[in-house]
Amino acid sequence: MKTVKNQVKIIGGQWKRKNISFVDAPSLRPTPSRVRETLFNWLDQDLTGKVCLDLFSGSGVIGFESLSRGALSVVMVEKSPQVYKMIQENKKLLQAEKAQVHFMDALIFLQENNTKFDIIFCDPPFDEGWEDKLFPQLANHLNKDGLIYFESASALKEHDEFNVFKKRKAGNVFYHLVALKN
Image 1 (cartoon, one colour):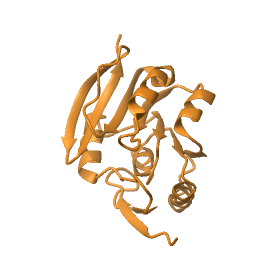
Image 2 (tube, rainbow, N blue to C red):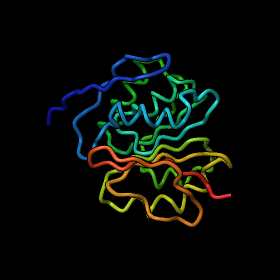
Image 3 (cartoon, one colour):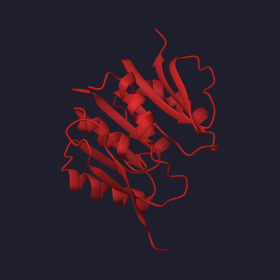
Image 4 (cartoon, rainbow, N blue to C red):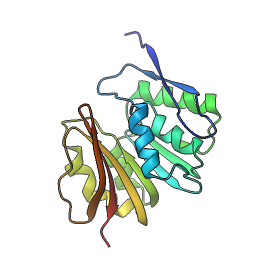
């Protein structure tokens, strides 16, 4: 099977206008630039000093965009071998030393890791029940004032520990910004 490289552009920060490549892979949907623009507006553009987790990294554009905007570090988790390899190539191309890329399942990463993050980005494959699998574990990995960005095929349900305080829809994608309840 031949892999075809596609490209997506980083829209802000030190790598603004840089293209990164991604492979054709099942359920890989790079977050569109207009959605990323809204997301980073919600996050006040500057991520200086933030420690981020990018679960289901896919193209890696959210993680690299975060580093471009000053994040202290980004942990990227991807389980597809082809997709993981392309993220590694993009990391090398950008000289993104502050990116740690893990080749593993997102749930296993959450179970085996006890790091707390300021921002957790979740863009899992749709229609596989990831919301119910992830949210019980995410609270343990979020700093007190941390935020979760979550993309899904439908609006998020109510969760005991979380408040959805920003949400929008673009095409068939619902995207949300979520915080821990105090």
